[in-house]
Image (tube, rainbow over all chains, first blue to last red; front, side, top):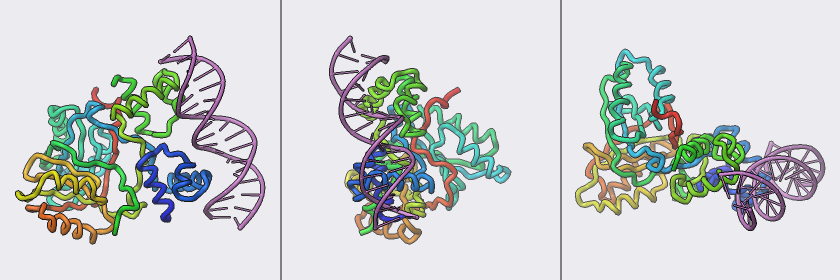
Length: 152
Length: 152
DNA sequence: GCTGAAAACCTCACTAA
DNA sequence: TTAGTGAGGTTTTCAGC
């Protein structure tokens, strides 16, 4: 993973459809050399996948919320994690420091869809307590840090 | 934005490199019809961009943290938002309900890089108070909800 | 939205360093 | 091991319907 690799990742993060020739021109390599590097980046897991960044509003998910979860003492941590990973409204779930166990990011169609989600957690006895924070607006949201502008 | 469109977005979210022929087979459309729909989805903003999902660890960003921010009364909201949107370590910033004004998600190389970030905010007099939560591990993190598995 | 042809692009075997 | 070259196949693009 050298400078050229992270530049390639940065370029692909900006536009995942850039041609190998374009990228090659940017990093002074032939298309096939770039191809080989991308293959390695994907194989090593540095690039997880090619995807699209969608506007969730346009897809009908108007509400973004964060749910702080304190796991119930009797809950099985692994079961909870599996449930989170598989749940369709959960876009992120992190084990965190501080007063709460997990921070869960969810996207739902409307405010009314939050309560059923919490009820699900309660019914499964995952919840000791929870707190929900609604995002009123989003200032920025990028899935990838574009390398090359980090430190100065 | 019909069912076919959201299915296309879902397929592209899974694999942004799927061919038009593949997608066409999945939604019973010709490649060129799929192409036209994708063009419209990009133009309308429903698809923001094609990109890659990267492993931040592999890129040298080992630390993920969430910073709760209560904006100082004298801070200019717009200036703060511009600053967040442009800051290289900030991957997300949301205006939220509850006791805090903003939730900021940052990715840095090491724990030691968090303090300089907070100092920056302090020096610019954005901060009334703040609280930082470190992510110990990530259970799931998908940038896009894959449509078609939502309600039942 | 479909068809078909042309252009652009990716892939891969081979070669060189 | 890593990169360049070129041929062949695939994919995207676009005009006409």
